Picture 1: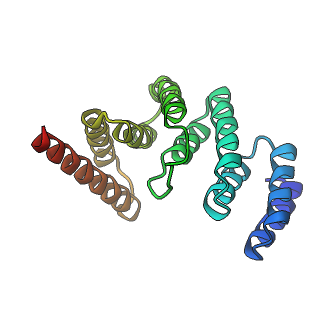
Picture 2: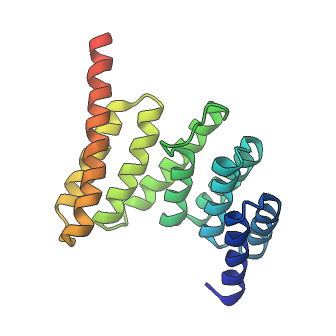
Picture 3: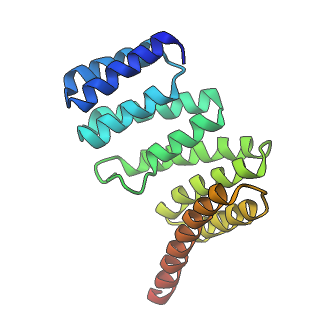
Length: 190
């Protein structure tokens, strides 16, 4: 980050902490204009609109832009961040157009799958986990389970420090149990 971007982020955080939403939004809009390469500013802007202000209309417009930029940049960080913004399990998406959200998730998944082939095992595990949330939410739970299992296998094969590897594995195993439970309940109902 250069000094101008650091100053801008300082202004944004000061406004957010003071719950001065008008100033925060103005600074975030400036940030997107001044630092269009800053993934952090885009994520912070989306989180502020969607989580703090519950402004779904403006948030949805920003998510569309976020997804377009992620696809244009074809960057791991941007693609994962866009997928996370669209499929964050702690966020209520009921007021979003699900068809368009599904379409954006599919498009992101195709780009992720293409880029994923060139990545290391840790990065592939991150990609698989992100795509699993998308597929689970939109009804392809079998594929979601397979993707999480592949992510677990990849992470188990890495020589990471235990304090890094264990939380990642715990998160994946929790998600895997959730998806398998969902799969079993669904099978029982059919």
